[in-house]
Every structure is written in structure tokens, then in C-alpha cells.
Image (cartoon, rainbow, N blue to C red; front, side):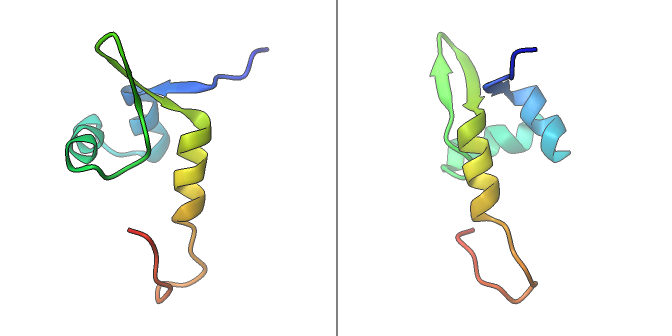
Length: 67
């Protein structure tokens, strides 16, 4: 079985249980993970998604982050 290396907007929204519109807004404002735009399609590399998730990992609610 081949590992998926790219996620589309719908797949990433489902992964994080957020709306696709939130991802659209984040792209507009420069928030969220890096993305690729290929021929009008937006895709997210899995490695960029994992890096973004890792950067937001916290061990307490008082921890400061890069958000």
C-alpha cells in the first residue's frame, strides 16, 4: 500500500475536524501550514502538515507557542 504524501483541502479539514473555509481563510491570512498551488488545485504536503502540527504541540495551557 502506498503512503499518501499530499492532502487536499477536504482531507486536511477532515484530519483536523475543522471546516474547509477555515483553511481557505488561513491561506488568505498567511496562517496554517505551507501549501502548494498546482494548476488551480491546492494541496498540502504531508511533511508540512506534520511539521505544523509538531510546532503547535504543547505540554500545558500556559506554554507559549508560535501561533
